[in-house]
Image 1 (cartoon, rainbow, N blue to C red):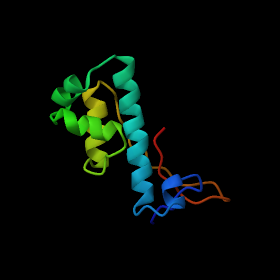
Image 2: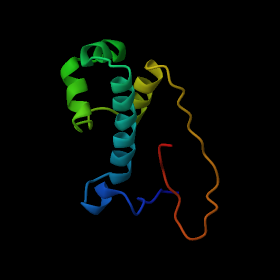
Image 3: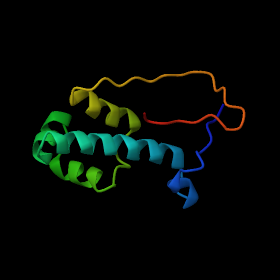
Length: 103
């Protein structure tokens, strides 16, 4: 079953291709950014930890994250010491469609 874009997905509203994936990536990058800021971690340190170049971190944090897959962004979160779980469960809400989200 293909998931549907959630009604509050701004990327779908403005016609971005693969809007659902773009939203998931944006949510993951938001988490990565929040962690880096809370730890006062420099982009150079994050780049070394993630095995990428500092300019790529800078671009990612500015919203240019198409080069990174969802899986790679999840690996960045793991490298920062977070558990990342993927939970699949039956959709039970009658008035809405199945969805993807970062919680």
